[in-house]
Image (cartoon, rainbow, N blue to C red; front, side, top):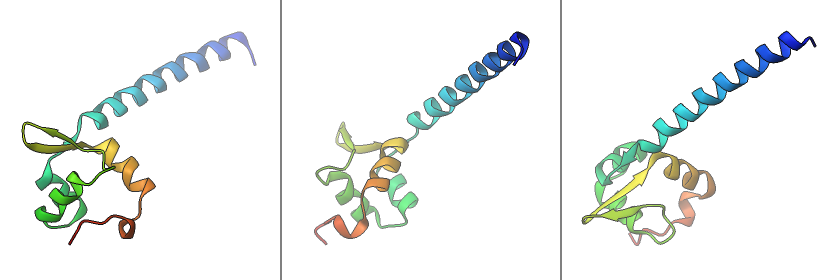
Length: 89
């Protein structure tokens, strides 16, 4: 590989890394509240609230309202199965 091709490849890789970082940043800023989680997972807001309060679920209580980032939700869903989650219902 010529030096010019190597430099061009490095520039292209840096551009792609920048695009990936921008996409990650955008995904990390998406946050669900209880109603948004209920819509995303097609469940009642009551169960979404119980899920948000479940120990081990990656939500945070901010001013009395539960919030969860889209990235944390996706990672949690990838690691857990619904039948393993006890919503007390």
